[in-house]
Amino acid sequence: MSAAPEPAALNLSSIADRFVAGASIRRITPLGNGNVNDTFLVEPHDSGGEAFVMQRVNTEVFRSPERVMHNLLRVSRHVGDKLSSSPEALQGRRWEMPRVIRLRHSNGHWVEDQGDFWRGISYIGAAVTLDVVESNEQAREVGYGLGMFHHLISDLPADELEDTLEGFHITPQYLQRHAEVLKQHARALDRQEQDCQNFIAARSGSVSVLEDAKARGELQLRPIHGDPKVNNLMMDADSGNAIALVDLDTVKPGLIHYDIGDCLRSGCNPLGEETTDVDQVSFNLERCAAILEGYLSAARGFMVDADFHYLFDAIRLIPFELGLRFFSDHLDGNRYFKARHQRHNLQRARVQFQLCASVEAQEREIRELIEQLR
Ligand code: GN1
Ligand code: MG
Image 1: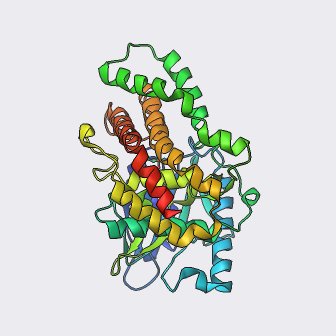
Image 2: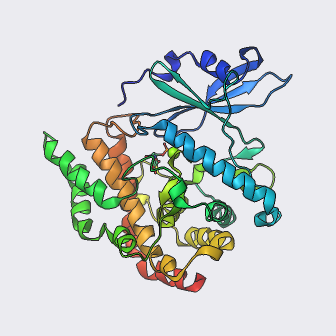
């Protein structure tokens, strides 16, 4: 786990004061449950000001945080311009784009303090997030949210975004790194670890399906979110409508398939990715139908035949890839994903592999569903 100081030991107030006057701050509390960055909500006194989200970016993961900020600013500007010039894109619904907060005493957008990198982002109020999808209506909204986000950034040229996380979602590279971790791993694998290893070995021949399609020019690099799991979607507190996709660190050029696969692996797992009830994990087909319907209601305009052709592969691959990432990190001493106990990342890996197996067992039904929606 990272050697950076625990957030509790940090002087949060003095960092927050760089973004808004300290005297106006009522409290600072941890927000959400991200696996990589540390996130806080900074709330003002009743008398004024707006709440905002303050984050310490994990620079072990994001080696060039200023490039992450470049992407964030670029995407916010693009969507802001697009919404003011063609508001009809929103189909009459509420949509919010997180804004980067400027420092009080300079034109900068971040604070570097004792080797840490901090930034502020506007907080989207009157909204809730879900850790698991509980109904098909919610599933449809989750799909719509990702589709709308993709739609809004679909005309931003991918080459205007930096590659902030090299190798992110490139499954063959994770497999390669895993082989190295395994080689360095000193002790024998226990039963659960060996099951994970066998699961990976049995699928090592099919991990490059999306990268191969990209190399052949069948799939195009586009701007993507990178991490559209369900709890990164904000839903309007009254209507339940999806109104924003947050956590924009991983926005960069990629395949929309990574995003669709990630959204489905998160939204179609009713027990959630943190469950300890691994054997009960399954991929819910109804939720999948609803998410894809919602997605296409906003995104159909830019989808081409090849995009549909590789959808099933993405739905199978992304839970496999995340399981592989968790398992590698488990063997590597939990250095990437924050873990609350020694076997946490192993448990998370087993959940994703079980989900992947459930996708494989329903391949025919999922492919039929995709054909119907096409
Ligand atoms: C990480 O930190 P968080 O929870 O937003 C990870 C995602 C994983 C996710 C699994 C930069 O996201 O790729 O899907 O955990 N983010 C990064 O919960 O690796
Ligand atoms: Mg994230």
